[in-house]
Image (tube, rainbow, N blue to C red; front, side):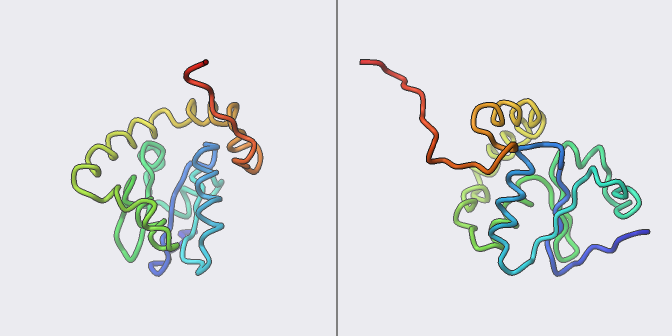
Length: 145
């Protein structure tokens, strides 16, 4: 059964086994008051059957999205998503010419190592294991007096 992509929504294909990725998708969903984003976990049992146009291996390397008939990759997906939910100011610099080039390279590095990074974030801050509350976090002291 091939599931058609709703062109009026931003469809995001993400790695649901990645705590960091799942945490961002949950945060995004909480801000999606207009229900304009559809999330699709790459690990859904029927993913390949429902979305044959999305290459699983490539989607595991870089975030994929589809919006109004256009395929988006990496930070294009992130930028579009946060803009659609009214938080575009958070990610606006990602689309500025020089920053865009650097951010894309950093994104590819983070995407490649997202599972070890997620593990560290999970152990350190509880991201992906429980709702995150930043009120309990204490930053390490760099200089001791």
